[in-house]
Length: 279
Image 1 (cartoon, rainbow, N blue to C red):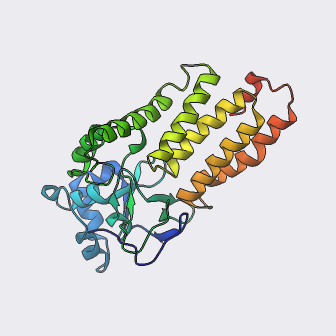
Image 2: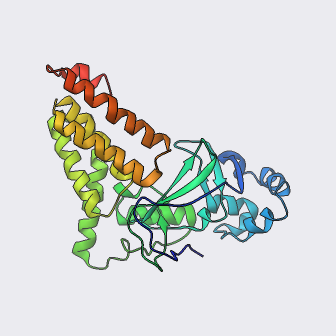
């Protein structure tokens, strides 16, 4: 099962929000005894809804349902949540939507990253696909969810095109791995190219925001006021697109956009050490 658009959806639209059917710590969701107790406390309406979700690990019974369908509740959180609709959104290595946990309102959200047409399937990325090659993505998805990805990105059959795809994503990964290995000017060029490659790969939202943050930091160290403004605006707009105006990431980016750039403009000497300490 999946989720299909029944009307045109513009980029940046909140498609849905919903509270989780069940929440728990990741370690608890892997323990059958805890899961049995958890399911027993669900309402008569919630229990069959949970059971209707796909189970990639049927030999684990209800534990497999949680393992298959749970989202992390926040960045680096040890808690997971399983949802009625959000858990049915399938994976793509070039997703058109992004899921996000709203910790203030305790709901999962789904925002559109691109303009979506009627009849188009809504997709999210289950893993950090931006810096992974085709084979790396397939291996992780097979291990964690037991499926072979056949999204538009993974279905490229032309060898040159697939190699180009892998090279772009490998380059993006290089930016993350070598952040402190080169001078700021070299890292700035890497960030510029990585952002270009992300755009060519159709990767928007959080992956593009992460690259934009690197570009911002390097422009800050290079004392380039105009580029600082450009990168922080990108950082904010990508988080706004993928996680909405109320997410902690968007709010932090907005605060950074309003405060940090003013400090660069105020300090004409633009000491790299002083600026870098502001990050």
